Length: 373
Image 1 (cartoon, rainbow, N blue to C red):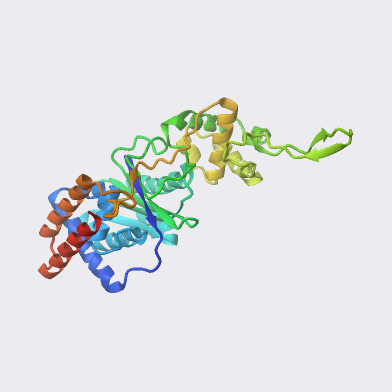
Image 2: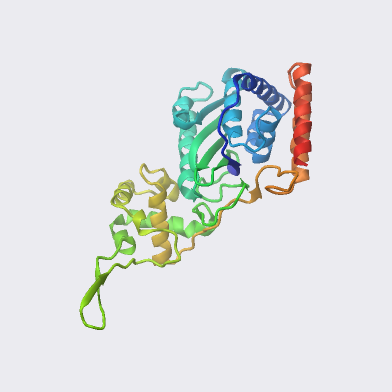
């Protein structure tokens, strides 16, 4: 299993008109059928888990090349185009409240045996929690889609929003290479811009922090208060001998974590986790109520008291998509770009679509190439 990467995209308003979406659905389905027929169901999942290929496919079928809406529209087209009986693939989830229905949609399917469906439902929940809470990059998830086959292989495509800078970041997961959901699940992350301070609790550098966090919870979270809460007012004397009062925080100034993060609610949530006695960090992350603040508070105490190392670097490794002809957000990676384009051209040539629509699609593909090279 492998988390393969993410892409940062500017937030755009509006939606694809119905006439365009129907054509996108048809072309998306045709290309998917070609990949399944010529290669396999697993190959389609692998390609959809590649941020570059996913972005190229969205451009080919007719969406804005750099819009955040490409993600929601393309996955919506896939959901309409792929049929579990015909293709052996099911797409669940979506945008907003629909994203939270993914586990129920999985369990209602007949494509796999029930035990596999239960595992997939847990995968849906855990992948969302990891991107929401373990990679704290200021992007809040609002879109989640899981695509799985009759064999139980899966890919996740989900997207978070940062309203402050009006960008969205897309996260891709693939099932066949991840050894752990909470340690180095990324193969690559494509990003429009890197954040200054990102607490990456999935990094290998944060391994000891994860271990200590579990120990802190299992030992009882009450003792965390003395490390993070404000001291009660402390007396300080001026030269006249009369006392004055000031407030002090028992934490170094160079950390981004604030004392307000250890609220009474956070302590209650950690108390629930203690009752569960998680055996590992993955179980801790899965615990209901344990979110950003809980994991962040534990990470800070682990670092302050036990000297563990936390990774504060944005895990983004690649610039967004294929770049642009003007060098923004980065110069085009021609080798990667040409590889994606060539595959899609071959797919279009073989796709079961009318000649007129095929020619229009190829023209659009060539136009996109001219804009970005």
